[in-house]
Image 1 (tube, one colour):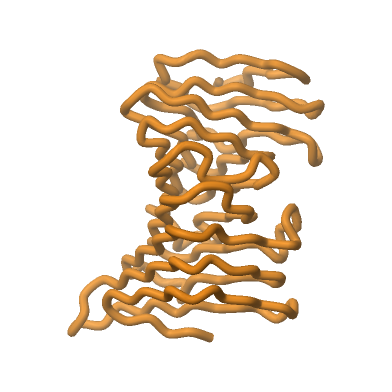
Image 2: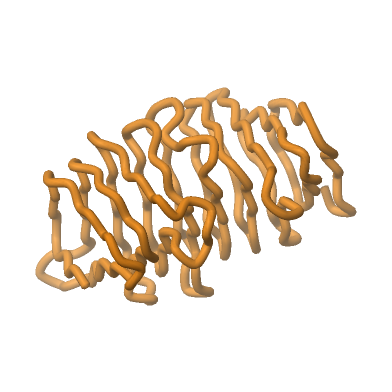
Amino acid sequence: EFAAYGTCAITAPIYQTGTERFMVKQDQVSAYGSTELTLRGGGSFAGPVLFGPTNTTWRKLVVEGAPIIQPTLGKRDYGFKFNGKTELHLKNQDNRMYIELGATSQGTGSSLHCWTNDVLNYQCDIILGYGSTMDLHGFDQQVGDLQTGTWGRIRSAEPATLLAFYDDGNGKTWGVNAGIDGAVTFRKSGPKSLTITGTNMTTGALVAFAGPLVPGATG
């Protein structure tokens, strides 16, 4: 476990070689207020990476500089899971991570922020659960299987395109209130079916290049 208080930065690469969990505890302490951790050296994470604890304190993780590589990409049990109120800010390109925001019911308010084009490799799967959001901030992105859970949303105030390649299982957005907001153009590719539900208020287009794109009963 690694404990972070206040504002911290790690400039050296981090290497996790085993599959034991790597946990970053960003506790809120009155002397520091909220906590912010910046990773600049990149690294390789083989096992599950957890950001906790599972409470409602506000935390921020920034990734810039060298990308983060996950050799176990595509395996949910070994991915990056963000509990509590966490902001994940990606400022570099070609990170290769399985990302799950709002990994517990206490994760309401978790968010993924993209600050340049292609912050993730197209093989990266993402789950936005329990009120989590993905904000493109006007930058085009490509991801793998993308799921939005209960009140999970995708948004961008400025025009941006999100390309999702569904190749693992029956990819779909799920949850009554899941949706796409702002000026997001959503492009679906890959052989698997995608069902869009919830209220979608985007002014962009919904485009299917390959495989079915199915509006749900509430889509």
